[in-house]
Amino acid sequence: MFELIDKDDSGSLAIDEITTAVKSDKVVKDFLKTCGDETLMFLLQPKRLDHALRELDTDGSGEVDIDECTARRPTCHPNATPARWTHLTG
Image (cartoon, rainbow, N blue to C red; front, side, top):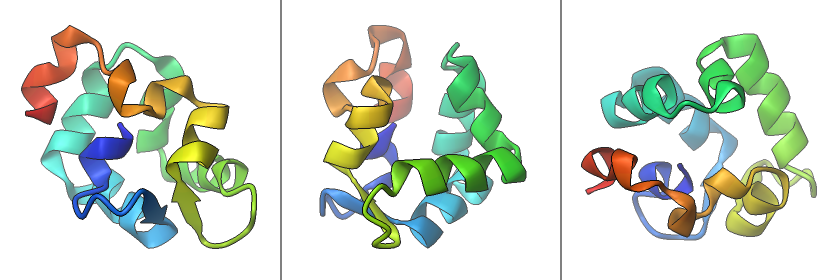
């Protein structure tokens, strides 16, 4: 999921960048709806998204980097994308 949002390949995502992607990026929304991971599907609900972002941003920087993301959600790692999701990522 991380690579779907990290369009500039910076290795970190601003909280606003994540929020915008979850709310308005069709590819990200489709991924969340069809990924089969209930925890990720709950990110489509604003209150749950806000809570998840606070949990992921362990250093309080206002950004989530790949290490923070994968420490909490292994499915955030780019290599964790199952083959059935590749139509959404490439």
